[in-house]
Length: 92
Image (cartoon, rainbow, N blue to C red; front, side, top):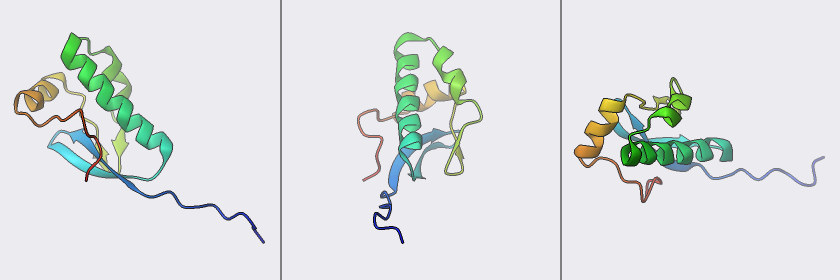
């Protein structure tokens, strides 16, 4: 008998950038949430500096069925279109 049952963590609904634009992924654990946060930070860094090297780590990474966008031209296009919101990566 487990006297200290594991509490289930709530699912976080986080925005991810895909080839179709921004989608909402259901994130079930801390490691994945951290990865999504790091991804957005690296996208922002690329747009600010032009250095794409950090985005290499996200090639073929899939979050809740959504493959993260790493095409540099596509990322720039989504930024110009105003689809990227770095202030709030959590869906409300």
